[in-house]
Length: 77
Image (tube, rainbow, N blue to C red; front, side):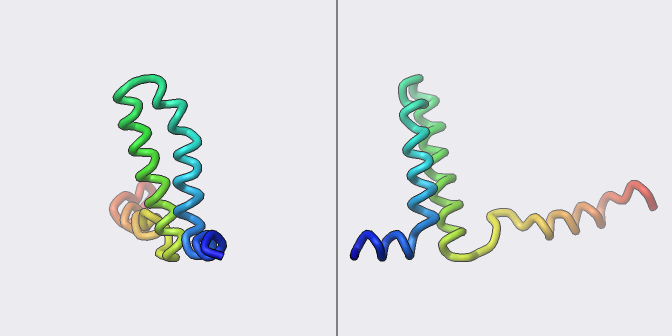
């Protein structure tokens, strides 16, 4: 029951971490700096999963950025 409840409440975080853990051994065999890259992958996977779990939308406000760029740069006035 615990695993089912954990899966239902934190599915995105678990999938993000699982993907990063799957990719990390590839990078861990190649040195220290790649290990730091692996830590970055873990952080990004967890953060994206957290946003998905909490239904906070996207990590970056793409629509707001698009509107801002369109208002600042209008090549065909």
